[in-house]
Length: 133
Image (tube, rainbow, N blue to C red; front, side):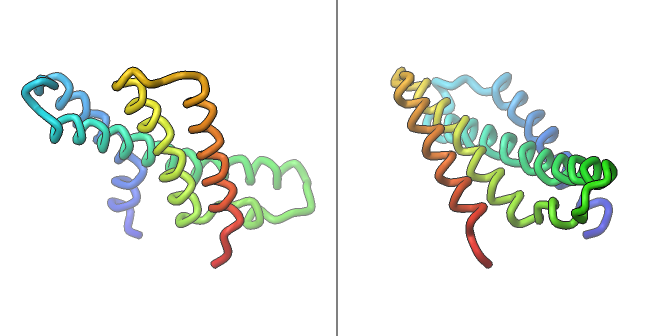
């Protein structure tokens, strides 16, 4: 990837957040209808997914470098998370806040619902991490 594409990928959450703030300030939810509400949910999902991707991809790299510098007998490469796996994990985890927001918007959010969302996300992450190529 060239540098401008990398910069766009790692800062996409900021630009999406600016778009979401603009949409929330300029559009009335009643007049926007279902399309406007769907746009807000999609923007929230994209913001959380891109932010989590950035954190996973760079955070794991920083932590693995710290572990290797402490003198462990492992290589930094064994702790790295690939771009594809970081994307899959971020996409699965980004669905959680959107699902909780959707349940909250229809006044159906209870402790059992939160527990079910957490269990669903844990299962999704388990399947993603155990997936073979």
